[in-house]
Amino acid sequence: MNARELKSRLEADGITYLLAQWVDINGTPRCKGVPASALDQFLAGSAGFAGAATVGMGQGPHDHDMIGVPDLDTYAVVPWETGVARLVCDIHVDGQPWPYCSRVALKRAIARLAERGYQLKAGVEAEHMLVMRKSDGSIAPFDPSGFDTLSKPCYDFKSLSGNLGYLRTLVDYLDRLGWAPYASDHEDATSQFEINWKYSDALTTADRFTFFKMMTSQVAKKHGAIATHMPKPFANLTGNGSHIHFSLWDRNGQNVFLDEADRRGLGQSRLAYQFLGGLMAHARGLAAVIAPTANCYKRLSVGEYLTGAVSGFTWTPAFISYGDNNRTHMFRTPEPGRFECRAVSGGVNLYLALAGFIAAGLDGIDRKLDPGEPFNGRNMYELSLTEVKARKIQWIPQSLQEALDEFERDEVVKGALGPELSSEFLKVKRKEWVRFHNHVSDWEIDQYLTLF
Image (cartoon, rainbow, N blue to C red):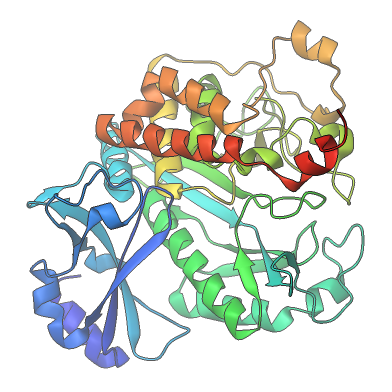
């Protein structure tokens, strides 16, 4: 879309206000409002931001303005407001793409992949919860119907129906946006939901995931709730993931992961296994970008396999493994021609995660890595430690600190972010870990106050 076409769209859609939107290092949406009447100034670089006022953008108070440069093809009418549209921006400084911008990093990775003649297509399962604040400041699941009380509420009609207005509104909005939504359901935890829409190219999917999080926050508010994609809001409930489904396609629009003659019976090509081999080889380094907060590791904790959630399962992987249509693996094969990564957290910055996937997958292709034979039919939750050691199966990192150490050692994954952004990522996240580690929790007070 060019500027003239955009102006015609604004007039036809009755748009009077624009959101110039980008994300910080956490994937948090950041915006500046622009009157539609000031579109020419916006396109000329009027949307300036003080980078030091946000998180992880590599700037101090002395640095030059970050400029939001809109991608006109991301134009979308904001369905929960009247007369508002969103344009996703890349961040530039002094006329150049800013290396601390997450979207810039993903575009760079996509360009590397395109040089080989491939495009990464991805879909995301955006699990999230509806919660409410109690009078004491704590949170509780949002359950206006009073029926969402089952230990196994997944797919339950009564649990779903209590928030059907919220879900139907979201599905209607996604349909209007042309995202082709095809399912919504109540997930495994109280007041936990998921909406599925059609996969697309990596950049479009990351842009849409960000917009979806913006959307859930506003629609939930109108229904009296708070929408959270936090990985683990409640200790005794299943956490929120953002499972990524992915495949490679060639310039002719053919899925090069698909091979119905696959000797392993999963319908995957040799190239697909090499790409997967790269992801598995770099899985411990990738953990920092697919599960980038201290809270993520409450969801991925191996200890949960001993204690479990209310439903009896955590639905999160413990091991770096793959197999058939089996939800206990880190990498599942839901159908021929694509894989799913189930370790991705609700707190993910999807731009960085997909950039990491591309870099790791390309390394697997370049080195012709083989992920080994799949663990078909095995419940990985029941694997004994003896078998884990005998098979030399690796664990997913068990803390943000461990994941950051692995990330710092992994030149391929760091290379996906680039030297500036990877350094900034480590700095921001190590500070986050220190703040978390130094916090004295209520559990520690209860456990130790009178123990000694």
